[in-house]
Structure formats: structure tokens, C-alpha cells
Image (tube, rainbow, N blue to C red; front, side, top):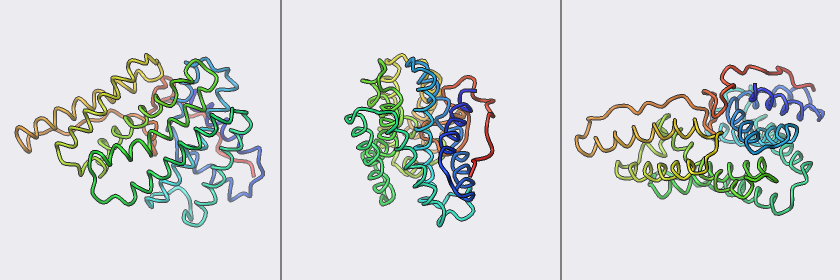
Length: 292
């Protein structure tokens, strides 16, 4: 029930504040829209880093609130926010609350200024990369890598800096976060047919898949249990995609659809199957109310 425990902690943290009833409804909807997202992974990554349970829950819940703020921003940008009744009026308010509570909770953790500065720099870079994404009309491999590093790698660099601060994993957090975010974004793009990847020429798709395969190989060397299943799923997908691209070069049209095993990506905005958490698939622990 690891994912549900963090979700409950996020609700508990929001309930510390006094919100109008309408805010409570929209905040709950935004949190539900992000599920399962990174919940199970955050729990497993915290456990593997040997965080005390209360520290793990506080940090992971704060990260989830930040994740949901970014998720809501992305959905508003793409006109895909179907979970709020009046998204373009109430969405920005909801996003602002999530964003500010996220930083309020970070302040309570008393992180060193250097850690907070690095986290903020990562998140600012992510915002800039989303601007690049929104204004890109013709994708190329270099632009894909630039955007992937920004919108996926930098947020997860920030999140793991927060989660793993003070642990033996702290020095590796930024690099691991960058790698995991980028590899998972490519998994999502291939599985969804996103234009970032789907519109690339075959040769540049091959370049991107090779790049991602190198990232997966690097992550394997970290020997982290919390990533074992995820890396296997992404690696299998990349191998299949590489085979398809090779076949396209030899015999155009002679390809098979790349089959993507359900995976809740670290940057996933849509509920799929849990990532990294063996016990989270059937996790329906929840609280359906956010107390005004």
C-alpha cells in the first residue's frame, strides 16, 4: 500500500491549510489526476536509501504535490485538463496552491541553501524547456534531447535531490534523476505516438533509441532495486523499437508495432500500472475528501 500511504500524506498536508470548498474539490481532483504517477517509485526509492519513515513520507508527499502542479500545468497547456469543471479559470489557482504548498513543505525540511538552490534551478530549467517544446514545430534528435533533458530530466533531478538529501545516494541524485526522467519520457513518447518522437526521420529515431539505451545501461550500473523492473521494461521496449527501425531501413513497411508493457512512468501524466512498486498495483488506499 506504499503509493496510497504517500497519497494520504499529501492530502494530510493540504488539510493543514484552510481552503474554500471549491479549492478542496479542485485540489483533490488534481491529486487524483496524477495517480499513480511516481508514488510507488518514490516510496521504494526512499526505502532503499534507508530514510526514516516519517521523513520519507513528508518528502515524497511534498514531491507529489510538486509533480501534480507540473502535471496540471501540462494539462492546461495541452487543453487536456478534463478533471476540473472550469479548468481555464480555476486551474491556475489550483496550480498556484500546489506549487506554493510544495515550497512551504520544502522550507519545513530545513534543507541547506545549496540544495534548495539546485532544486529551484532544475525546476526553472524545466519551465524553459516546456516553452521550447510548445514553440517547436519541426522535431530533430538534438531538439528532442534538449527538451527531454529539460521537461523530464531536470524535474527528476530536483525530486531525487529532495528525496535523497542526507543519504548515501545524495551525491548521485541529480545524475540518476536526469537519466531516469529522460529514458521514461522516451518510453512514454513511443507508447503514445507523441510527435516529439513519431515525426523524427528513421535515422534520427535510431539515434534517439541508441542514446536512451546508453542511459539505461548507465542506470543499470547503479544497482538500485527500486529501478530494476522499470529498466527491464524500458530496455525491452527499446530493443523492440531498434529492431523495427532496422527493418524499416532494410524493407520499408515491413515492421511490427512496438509493444509497450504498461508502466507508470516517472513523468507519466496518465494513470497506468505502477512503476517500481511491487505492492502498489492493487493499491486503492485513498481519502475522497479534502477538508475545507
